[in-house]
Image 1: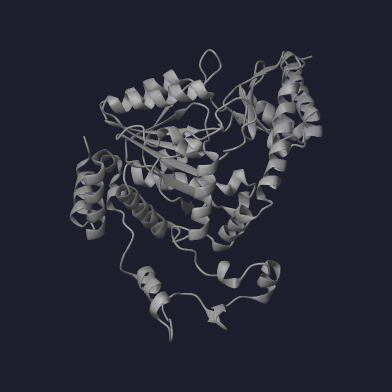
Image 2 (image 1 turned 60 degrees about the horizontal axis):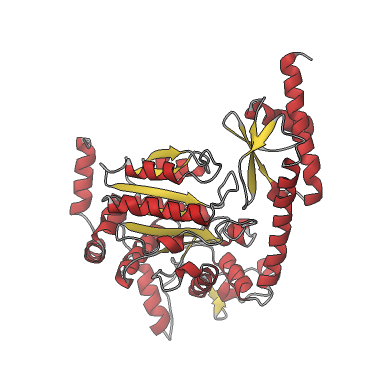
Amino acid sequence: MMPVMQSYILEGMIERMNPLAKQLNETLERENRYVYEMLSQLGKSIYFPKEGILSQSAEAKSKAKTFNATIGIALEGGQPMHLKVIQDTLSAYAPKDIYEYAPPAGKPELRSAWKRKMLEENPDLNNKLIGNPLVTNALTHGLSIAADLFADVGDSVIYPDKNWENYELTFEIRRGARIVNYPLYNEQGTFNAEGLREAILAQKSKGKAIVVLNFPNNPTGYTPGAQEGKEIVAAIKEAADAGINVVVITDDAYFGLFFEDSLQESLFGQLADLHPRVLAVKVDGATKEEYVWGFRVGFITYAGQSEALLSVLEQKTMGIIRATISSGPHPSQTFVLHALNSPEFKVQKQEKYEIMKGRANRTKELLDSGKFDDVWGYYPFNSGYFMCLKLKTVDAEALRVHLLDQYGVGTIALGTTDLRVAFSCIEEVNLEELFNLIYQGVKDLEAAATGK
């Protein structure tokens, strides 16, 4: 039962709800009441102000021909004021494309360019209705927006036992949701679609589930094959048919880095029009895909049954952005847009892909050599930045510390048996030495344990 104080707070929020929020909610209820039911209380309350500094500034930008004294930037000589010491390093770009505030939803040209790229790389999206991507401050921000809009206290957020630890902070710590895990792999070493199915159907009494799909997976570097993908989609549809509202977030941080015979597209395409009770949300970005980690440029995209529904979700997303970071950084959006529009973009990206694929293949070649089989196995991997060793004889954290102290080798310990290795940041010629050192570290700990 909801605590009395919390009940009063929620009732008060509803009574004080802004008319714009009410209007958005009414539209959403009319277009798809299931998606309205998916919203958190914050999601129902949030809106993007139509009247205020931003809207008045936008109106003035088009009409104030004499003087425009609305927006909080400084102008000089008809362009944004700037320091020469900064502009000298950015001279390839016009001041208007780096110093002004970007719109809360992101640079319009960048949003359009990313959508074109998304449609080109995901043929499953052909003839599907999706919104224009909204720019986020990289992937974590996109996930945080989704959590704010859809996760309430006690809601179940479902993702596998091998996962990115930031999900816990984003959904459980920030929003009070309840994390539900299932084993990533089944006994055949493929994606555990049955475990996912059982986890979602277990939410029948709640009537709602939030599912996070992260492929290529962090930390294992695993992407399902085509048949596994169909099983995942079927599990979600079965839950929707059973009356469960399902928000499915595809965390596509490492999209495109598929090195073997796995899915080559995001499942967002297959989920986009799956069922009225399924809301597909794609979170992706230039961060990993285009090797610009520090630029912090990501995107959140919704699929829906109508333009009106997509418009409501966009307005509410803009409200979250306005209330948190106001808008993302303009320079990095301009840099990414420039890259996407460059005729050299695809060639250069393919060159980097081949390097990454070479590192992944060399890693698997070393692990399959039999040289290390006495001390570890490894979880199936075929994509992304990482792979995970499954240690047989020593504790993962003890090994991690020993490798750092004795050999200057950094790895990530996950639980007692799993050691994550990022082959993405190791030159191919150095991979054999890396795994030899990890192996030696295991042998050191084994010897210490036996006193030999």
